[in-house]
Image (cartoon, rainbow, N blue to C red; front, side, top):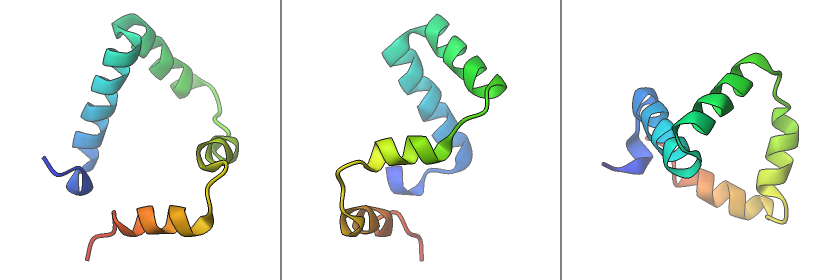
Length: 68
């Protein structure tokens, strides 16, 4: 399966698989419950994810995921 062409359902499935593999079933379910009931600061998360990266690097990676 080409990662660049995943639909929303496939992304959800792969994400849950990754959580289960990394955290185990119980902790993965707790994580999902926490996300569902607590507000999330996406700006804070984005700053952490992209820390130390140049805008050009981020843009080039994003371009690789664009569909025509």
